[in-house]
Length: 351
Image 1 (cartoon, rainbow, N blue to C red):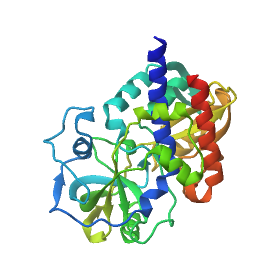
Image 2: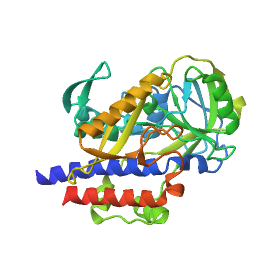
Image 3: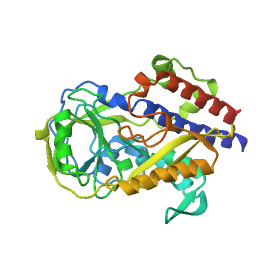
Image 4: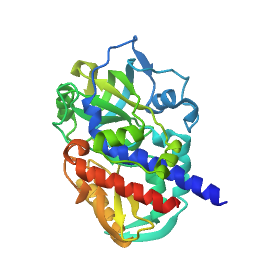
């Protein structure tokens, strides 16, 4: 029994580490090189069909269509989607069997109902919140102006059947495509009648190689043991360079996004926790309500500081590591300290 508990704890921390490193590396999306096109256009029917093609047997839902194998360099054509600046922090995780299991388990941890700012929330306890966030829920918006002309902004595609940014397909657009997007984005996420872009699929360095190289920190044997349970999600995005490859149309609604944060607690045995709240990005009041909920929840459960923020354009939380700039270039010392603290958290939980 004790071994099963330890294994479940290791599985949780494996996803936490995937999440933590993913957060620190978000700006890497706009630093990658152009890929040559290696195929004629391959049509993808929907967002779910894209993830089915990438995940295969790990896809948690009923197959939405015939399996279409996708590879690095494929020219992808997709219709009737919506483009947003709000992107999944852990792309693809919500579509996996592991993600669905973590979400289902997290939703069982109901603490009760909270009346907050004239609304009633069904609230999960910290274990439940952390489980749902580790399932892949949590949206991010990076800052503009840190990429190149061709790799300008990290964004996401959603569709009507999956009206949530956390389910989206990662895309990287050029500055000219982003400028076209802004013309249509005043009231919501623009509808894209059709687009074409080049698929990038990249292999990451193993964490035990990446972390010392990037920020000079090291990992304990406990962390390395837990990392054998990493989700190992495909690191992918669709790259769109020319505005002629995108047919924008106006739209006055926006898929839901998830405000989230990791916060440090007073309790050493449970050093960090997550919380989250859904919001409508086209409604500023909805966004501010979500931020207020994060702050209240962290306070309620002994939070002493926020570690992460979810918005790089307008900071919403006084976090240790912000998204206003690349954490691995501009906040390397803080990132290294955070990695060390997470390492200590794992050690104290597994020993």
